[in-house]
Image 1: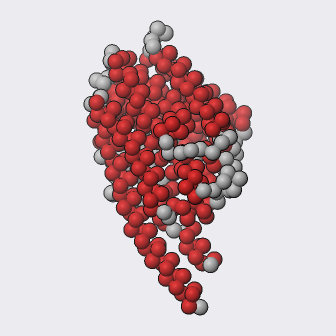
Image 2: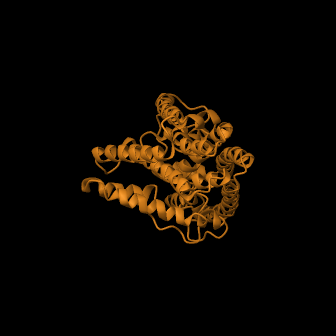
Image 3: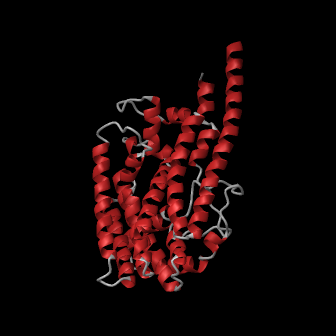
Length: 363
């Protein structure tokens, strides 16, 4: 049966769930202008961050370069065709650009500073996340960079908003939400999760994601004198981040399965729950691969992700944010294509497995 086990582990049906940059992106290609309309803005942001990077102490520049090129990838060369696989969407910093355009903020400097604030906000959380998960960098370096990125984020906001602006209240609330999400996760991990794909679970575990993007998007409403749209922006941020949380866990399931506490992953927690595996028993990668071969199970994961994306899309449509609705439409279409492709490969896999088992029974 060793050969059968090898077939299961190597199945492309399951490996496709972790692909981040496949060679053939023709079916899942995003409209080029979603990105290329803002090429000049990206170049400005890259130039600003490179200049800031040069001011860092030499002892942390190597670590910072990792976060700027491998994690948030703000200094990576962009795909000239603006294409992205649906398991590797590029909403940062484009969400700031897309909403700024929808709200009539046409000044390039304002749009660029909004995008820069979104980049720095996301950069500030990444060393902290790695510190909690464990990495090869020194904790002192990661703590320094987390604070440094956050300070740059704050400085950008001060260029856009006065001291009397309500943005500071929003930022304070988001910081509190981030801490509350952390506390909820620590408490939740002490007991079995009822439904890791539920709105309640995802709302709490994605609070830190919403806390990162919401202040910048809220700032768009303040700068355009449309504060009444704040609630819609908040609903968009929370719904999009709940879908994004599923996507992120789906993309990283192999890496997460090697961690001691897989309950931080909604996807792996869902696999454990569906398989009836007690918390005392490890969820191995081999078992996870086998579970991913269940078409109904995979469909439930994608369905939950799509449900939250559609909720976010409704808010974007009401705000007439056409770039955002187009982006989400392409993501959802990519999910449908992925499921269809996986169904075809699953059939081929089962046929191969049946032939292998038949051959073993003969011998």
